[in-house]
Image (cartoon, rainbow, N blue to C red; front, side):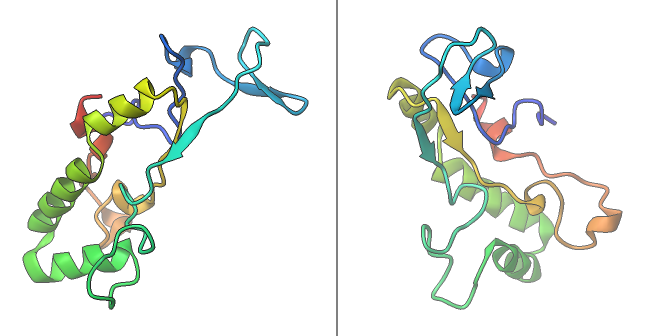
Length: 141
């Protein structure tokens, strides 16, 4: 699994990732390991891993959240087909072109909301033997 590449916030500069140069605060400033102030410019990729109803309508109105969507798909089609459908959705909601455009647009922070259901099947999580592969791994980005 590529959890190492799956991060909540991806920080970029024009030519390198800040993964090797972690950010921290110095007073009211965000600085890199050399003490240089870093101005954060970000975007929200809501709706990618968590279907936020205000941002991406889930159905005609009866499904309130991602959990309910996955549960409904599991009941109708089975877990394997549900996972295939969710993977298709996630691969198309945000694409590598979108990520490239964000980086090329000069943004250096990406908000990517996630939840536990992104990593484990929702049924019987305490005994989960399978782990979902986060969609960012499918992008190859």
